[in-house]
Every structure is written in C-alpha cells, then in structure tokens.
Amino acid sequence: MRKLIAIAFLLILGFFMLKIVSVFPFGEERWGVSRHYVDKGIEENRASNLVTSIVVNYRGFDTLGEVTVLFLAATALAFLLATCKCRKKYERIEASLILKTASDILYPLLILFGAYIFIHGHLTPGGGFQGGTVIASAVMLMLLSRFTFHPNHRALSTIEGLAGIIFVLIGFAGFIWGGSFLANNILPLGHWNRLFSAGVIPLIYIAIGFKVGAELSGLITDMYKVTKEEE
Amino acid sequence: MAFFTASILLILIGLYAVLVKRNIMKIVIGLSLMDTGVNLLIVSLGFIRGRTAPIINVKDLLFNTSSKVVDPLPQALVLTAIVIGVAVTAVALSIVMLMYSKKGTLEIDEYKELKW
Picture 1 (cartoon, chains in turn red, green):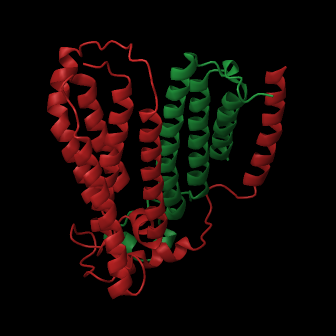
Picture 2 (cartoon, rainbow over the protein chains, first blue to last red):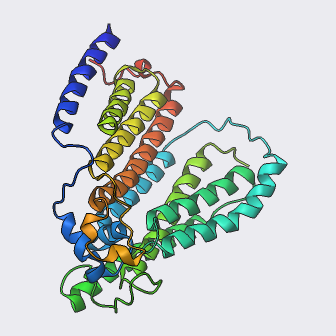
Picture 3 (tube, rainbow over the protein chains, first blue to last red):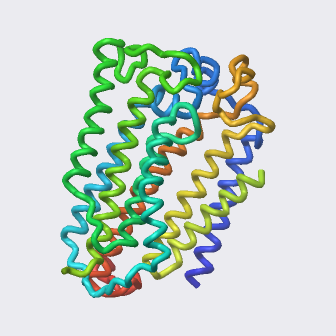
C-alpha cells in the first residue's frame, strides 16, 4: 500500500517535472549572462578553461561559500564521530600483497597527479576540488593497505586553515588594490594558454587544492578511526 | 529530451528509495542518486548540439567563441553542487554510524522516539 502511494506520487511529480523541463528545447542555444563569460572570458581572465574562469573569478565569492560549507561538513562530521561510542568490534584483515605493493607505487604518483590537476586547473579540465579529491584517494589507499599509516591530524588541519586564509587574503588583496573582492587585476595576466597566466586564478586554485585535499583526508581518517580496533 | 527524461527518472528513483526503503543506508544511497540526477539535469540544460567543451586551447576558438562552445555556467554550478553533495553524504553517513551505535540496527522502523 505504502509502495503504491509512493509510486503514484512519484508519477505525478515526474509528469510535472517533465512538463516544466520540456519548455526548454534540448540542445539549443540559451545564452544568458554566460555569453559575456564566454566571449570576454579570455580577454578579462586569460584562463583557457572557461569553467575555471567562472568558478574562481566571476563566481569566486560563491566558491568561498562552497569551501566554507565543506569545512562546516568536516567539522560536523568530526564532532558527531567524537561523541559516537561506535563499537570497536571490527577485526582488521591483513591487506593482500598485491594491494600493499601497488599502494606503495601508487601513493606518490597519486599525490603528484593530484598536484598536477590543481596546478593546471586554468588550462585543462580539473581544478582544486578534483585535485584535492585525488590526493584524498591516495590517503585512503594507504589507510586501506597499511596498519601503521597515521596521517598527522594537526598538520592536516594547519594546512587546511592556512589554505583557507590564503584564499581570503587574495580576495582582500583584490579589494585593496583591484577595486573589488577577488578582483583579478592585481597580478599581470600573462599570455593565453601558458602555465603562468590568468592572474590570481592559479594561486586560488592551488590554495583550494591544498584545502580540499587536507579536508577530505582528515574526513576519511576521522571516519576510519572510529571503526578501528584500539591497540 | 532523452537526457531530461533519464535524469528525472534518476531523481524519481532516488526519491522512491527515500520514501519506501526501510534501511538507512539505502535511504542515503537514494539521496545520493537524487543528487546525481539533479546534476545531470542541470548539465544537460546547458548542452548545445554540435559544440565543443568550453576550454579554449586552440587558436580557432579564440574568436567568436560563443558560437563554438557549450554553456559553461551550468557546469560551474554543478561543480559546486557535486562538492556540496559529497559533504552532505559524509554528514549523513556519520549520522547513520551514530544511530547504529545507539541501537545496533539499520532498520528505520526501530527508531520510534520521534513518532507520535
């Protein structure tokens, strides 16, 4: 009975959602404010990746809020798990030789790849969030394969705090010398499609990469520690 | 149109899991599915037929750009939404862990404290 009511409700909801969405024809031009971002993006920011140009510069304030939400979630998770008296009855199984050997080789490579992704965020697909996630996956691989691997929690939170402060300070530098918060005219813009270009965008994305990497690593470590047996 | 239908279907499947399933983990999976459906819907709203990705890495794309690339704004919004989705899933999972440590079960019907 409950399932039938739910299915009927979902059918009605789906019908109206489809009705609303079908107002917009699929695959046709629908430019609003983003026409300016696309046509003037290279001229104003010199970032080849227009998505990065929007995320970090045009909507940079939004991204600052997003980073704050991520920080808030990590804090809430640490708080919830600190009060959790989760039963530590899980017995760890020794990781297999294949996983151990592979994670030894992959750990530095994954961190290098994450750094590559967030340093080239203004040139190629990717950026601070993606690179940070790759770094966190490297930490997770080590947690799965090694008993003795303990990420330094204090260092992680220091990196995270410093990266956040650098983001805000770059924003205020734009406020003082550029005219508006996160303005992109305090550094030379450089040539299009070069590594050293796009003004403050790479700096902000590197800060975000460090922040997200440290944050997600800390988050994974928090979740992992609860289920671990006490030595 | 197929993209719109598929993403709305994904949202509805997620909502079905939230409404009907009794296992808390399945509810969290449903939330995550809804998240993916919404992201897919927003991205497909910005798609334009026959255009390339909004990355200007060849000289040809430098001029008259808005007739050659898809809309980058929905992609930027979805980038934000994915990160928020990860944060929401992480907090939801930690709440599930806390609930399991209190009662030792994942069945939502066993949690009667807030029923009236």
